[in-house]
Amino acid sequence: MRIVLFLLLIIGSSSQSAWAFSRPDRLLLATQEWFPYQYQENGVMKGPGIDKVKCVMRHLDQPYQLTMTKWDRAQLMTEVGSQHGFFLASHNSKRDEYAEYSAPLEEQNWSWFSLSDSTEVDSAMFKSQIKVAALFGSNKWFWLQKNGYRVSKKPRTPKALIELLLNGEVGAILGNDAVIDETIKKWALATEPYPVLVFSPSLWGCTFPKPLSSDIPVFWRSLMTRPNSAVSVQYGFNDRSIICLYQSE
Image: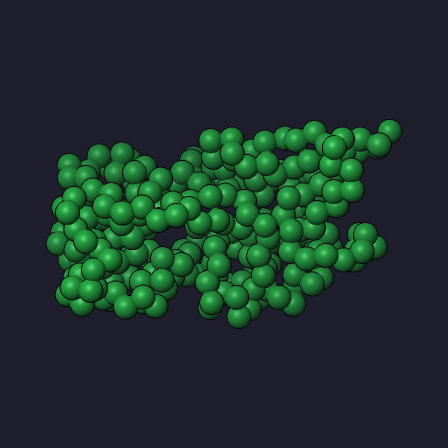
């Protein structure tokens, strides 16, 4: 009887001989403070995003180091090679130039927030006249620019993003609904923005530079040859995401 580890983190397909490659002595991954997904409490990193990466590393017996920094810096460190990857991240055209993704680790909702519940954020008049904001360097920030919104502010924390709205510096913000809700609760803000439009859910994964991703496929490939005998172990926000699978033979 032996136990085989399966991962639902898929970058590409290759033969099982990939186990013979030389793994990094220590896998370096960067992330951001992004409550409730990943955060620090008394100097300890916590949250479902952290738990999922730890799950994979533990069962692969892979030494690793997690660095929590600003989101734009996490991406830059990966692009220039001082980190092996960053998480949790979604696709955009800029990242696709230098990076590849694992299969989804987590799901998020993008939501517009305003101080008025009648704000028409998708109207041509709104786009041309009203300033908006999203977390600087995020996929939302790039999406706003690409779709013709007036974006000039560069908030680097959820609290700073919400304060732009409460102070009247922007007319609406685009953010992760869970992060915005938890930030409002944490800081006990007297005024709460209205969620005026919810996008379809988008997916997050772990991101690796393209040269590196071809060297470490074993971390992010499915080895599911007999799924009917697999037993799942669940980790994640609201227990929705299956990360590790074990198969007995």
